[in-house]
Image (tube, rainbow, N blue to C red; front, side):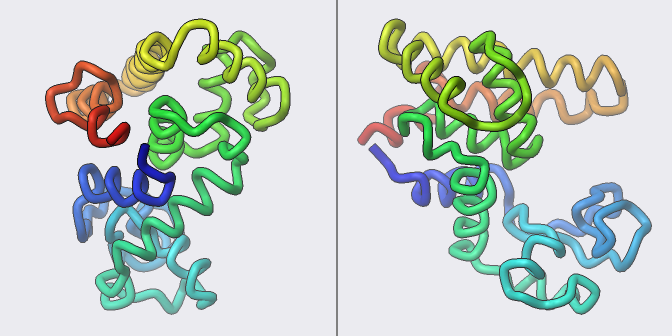
Length: 199
């Protein structure tokens, strides 16, 4: 089974691409919102604010050159810290579903990832990882198996994307990519991530 760091490298490589300068993406601006600050882009999904935090520099000093210098290793370190360790996903047993939760948190935010997990588990959805959530998840995996839980997680993750599109129909342009990404972490997906993860 692959480690959380190896998983971060894999999903960043597969889903984030290298450089993006899309002005419609809030994360590509130094102010964290479209039209605020400077448009410098992102690399490997790492935003100006994220790289400024990692390198200990003011976000206003981040340039396009700074962004283009971000390495895959830096991106994976950020993923590990911000989307696995800090939100306490390390309280969960490390398995394919936890890997998908980590990936979902990268896109939707770790609090939203934990809330979605809590809704799947029918526990208090406060977005904070604690013993109750971790215990419920561990129990479900133990009784139902990781294949079943992966299917349940895929279903609720997919429903979340449908809800976002329902609230803002302009997000429909992302639907295919979101669907492909959530299905990628299931046993039957044709790209073979499941087999890679368990090798």
